[in-house]
Structure formats: C-alpha cells, structure tokens
Image 1 (cartoon, rainbow, N blue to C red):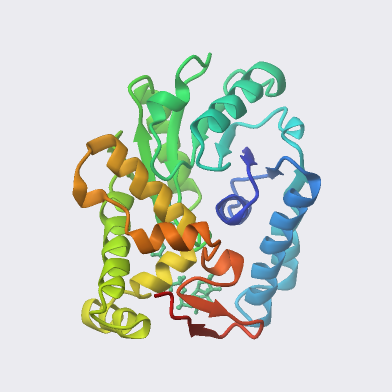
Image 2 (image 1 turned 120 degrees about the vertical axis):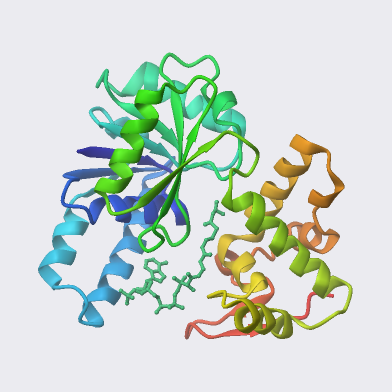
Amino acid sequence: MKVAVIGAGTMGSGIGQAFAQSDAVEKVYLCDIKQEFADGGKAKIKKNLDRQVAKGKMEQAKADEILGKVVTGLADIAVDPDLVVEAVLEKMDLKQSTFRNLQENIVKNPDCIYASNTSSLSITEIGTGLAKPVVGMHFFNPAPVMKLVEVIQGANTPDSVVAKVKEISETIGKTPVQVNEAAGFVVNRILVPMINEAINVYYTGTSDIQGIDTAMKLGCNHPMGPLELGDYIGLDVVLAIMDVLFADTHDNKYAASPLLRKMVRAKHLGVKTGIGFYKYNADRTKTPVDQL
Ligand code: 3HC
C-alpha cells in the first residue's frame, strides 16, 4: 500500500511514521507546501526512531527500513497513492482546496481513498463539491503510539469507504471506532472541554498549574495532567476545537476560557512554541509558567 500524508506537522509526521512502521505499507509520501517543512517532518520521524534504537527497542536496520519508505516533497509527488490522509491546518477552505487539487490535478489512481485527519470539522462539508468522497480518519497524538483511530462517516461517505478505512486502520495495528459526524466526534467532544475546564479552574484561582495536573494524574490515573496535555496538543488546536463545538451547538458549556484565548493570542501555544502552561527547556525538562 502507498500512502500520501498531506501536511508534515506534528500530526502529519506522526501519521506518516505510523504508516511507515507497518509491513503492509511500501511507501509514504510526506508532503507539505514547502520542501523544508516536509523534510522537517521526516527529521521528526528520524528522531523518534533514533530514540527507539538508543533504548534498544528497535534494530538500526529496521529504523533505516522505516525511514527509507518516507519520501518527502510537495503534494505533486502523490501521483499513485492508495490512500491520502490530509493533515493540513484546521481551516475548512484549505482542506477543501487541498482535496480538490489532489483529485483534479495530481492523483492518478482512480481507486484512491481520500481521508481527513480533521480534529473536529465537518467531513460532509469538507467533501462538498468534490468528485470523490471524503472519510474521517482521526489519529491521536503521538500517532505512532496511540492505538485509536476514529473513522468518521460524513453524509456522503459510502459504507464501503468506511469499511475499507477501518480495515486499513487494523492493518497498521490501530483500533478503529466508527463514529457518525458530529462536532468533535467522540474523543475531542469529551476531552477538549475537560482541558478548557481545567484552564478555568486555574483562571479562577482554585489551584496552581502543577496542583491541577497532579490532581488529575493521581486522582484519575490520566497519563498527563489536563494543562500539560493542552500544551502537548497545542493550545491553538484546543481553542479551535472549542470554537467549533460552540459554533455547532451555541451551548455556553463550550465557551472557550478567556485565558485560553489570551494565551493563543500571545503565541503561548505549548510545546510547539516552547511556552504554554509550562516552559519547555532544551534538556527536555519543563517548568510551570504563571499565566495569570
Ligand atoms: N512520537 C513517537 N513515539 C513517542 C512519542 C512521540 N511524540 N512520545 C512518546 N513516544 C513513545 C516513546 O518512545 C515510548 O515508546 P516505548 O514504550 O516503545 O519506549 C512510549 O511512547 C512512552 O513514552 P515515554 O516513556 O517517553 O513517556 P510516557 O510513558 O510518559 O508516555 C505519552 C508518553 C504516550 C505521550 C503519554 O504521556 C500519554 O499517553 N499521554 C496522553 C496522550 C493523549 O491523551 N493523546 C491524545 C491527545 S488528543 C488528540 O491527539 C486529538 C487531536 O485531534 C487534538
């Protein structure tokens, strides 16, 4: 199977790695709008694989084989994929134009499946006006590790495409859960308001950053505290999902925290900008930063 991943950021490169690690996948086209962005995505994959080799969890030869499957470039290298997974920014018009360009000008394989890794946008709307249907294939960060793939059926997604994507997910060692289209699907509908609530708990002075994260880690057995997880996902992504939930429902329970909005304006986005609720140091340690 050949897979094209469009967008080589955190999710795109992780998704590329998840596919390249499968014996069923012979090639991953990792594409972005600039060659250097695509190369940067491949460098992230190399770093992860190097870590596995250093820990003695993977042979160097296996790491080389996985990395060797990843070809980087602009979208125009994706001529013959069996599956396209779009992981560009969460902007409806960008996602629509990306699929249109792929379907009309680039991909020559008539049986190619078109999937979006959108975290909350409407699959039906993304697919509107396109010649070929779009299905949701939603991975979780870090994509090479997290087992779940939400497979989302839009109003115009045929059952056969959904079934095929579930089968592909299993082939690469993931567990698919089929969901109907709804803002935030299942996980982000539940998880992201929880993170937003944790931000409000901090904003209203109930506890400090470490207190909230420690409480949720030890009190609920979560692997990461909610503020740490918000930083990890990217606070801009968290805000975008809250705004989609609110726009779709007009329910005040989905109103984004004013502190979240302020931090996004300040580019305190978390790991990706080096600062959020924590400051991320070069030695991989992190220290809480008061944001009030
Ligand atoms: N890429 C690849 N592999 C990674 C990785 C990354 N970015 N980060 C960690 N790993 C691997 C490590 O190499 C390690 O592998 P090994 O067991 O084979 O050695 C394994 O994951 C565990 O890593 P660590 O020992 O370094 O650290 P932890 O045990 O603390 O686990 C974690 C790290 C898996 C990130 C864990 O803290 C966790 O599960 N956190 C919660 C993540 C989560 O909730 N994700 C969902 C976010 S929501 C989302 O993505 C949806 C989107 O639409 C917003």
